[in-house]
Image (cartoon, rainbow, N blue to C red; front, side, top):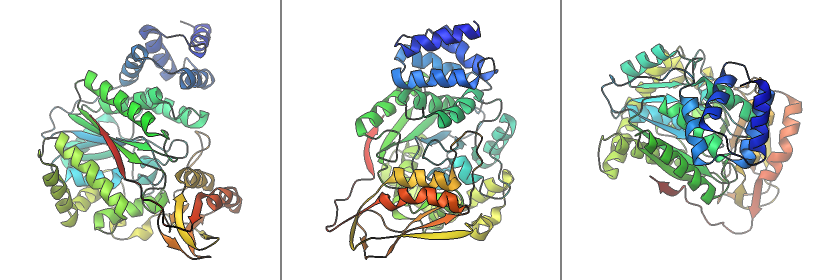
Length: 437
């Protein structure tokens, strides 16, 4: 096939036609080796975003991504291997406290995470706020760390699922993130490359998620469960709310600090609860116990005893990071300037819009507008009032850490409209909306 041929394939998908397995495999291989340039792949991604993939396209597309590079062999690891992945949210740092807590209970967690997409943060960006921490590991080192510690926190190497690493960055910069087939294939190609015994998914629903409504989120979850089943990998999914930020911290270094708070027993209630709920599913899938209550107790004991924090400290050191951040949070990057968002009137917080807060964080420099942008780990937002909280006029709703006054000015309109103050206490929304698988 030639570059002229890719133009024809883009046009066919744009017009609602289907691509064959051979064509899809060629597209993934040609983009990975540089034969197809970014501008043509961006056009194809937009066509898929608009037209979608049917099941006869999605399976070979995911397969091609999975086999675009190396595939791990972790069969010799003497523990059940279970990972977790989130579809992305605002303030979603769950993977960082969750993985060591689960690993401390006897499950090997070969966690392969991603960077921020659109208005959502990325686990790798948060981890890299730790001085020296390396997230890009070659497969041999990735495997050694799992063998020794039962846990690794990394992204794709140059050779492990390289197609997804390239497509991930391009989707982020081309407005093609919230697409069920593109999200499902991205997540599952990475996870299936890890040689897992099971996978737990956190599929976000709401204004700060890529799936704004529960029906779309359920379709995404079902799609990924089916892709896992086709490869013999059990997959469970929780549908969780993302209408307001998760926890209090939105950014990178501040979310890393909040993750450490969770493992210290002082984290925000919603972050702690979701960590326990997802961890329970991971222990059940991994066969550590068959009882949900027992799984939750095991996780609680791992956190309360300090074993989960010790596990994280060991992995930070193994990946080149400074484990002193566990006790000295000042080693994390700190915002040089601060600005407060205040309540315009007394009442109760009826809404704290996750998308507005997430986009504001990107404008501050906590994420990327272009795939080549650098992330500033020090900037971010500390949410001080969430749904149901009483506030007085002039009371701080958020503290904004910033470096560039122009970036702050760009973020302020979003933050000033993100909070809705009502006269009556609003109804509370459940954290977990449903389960699939």
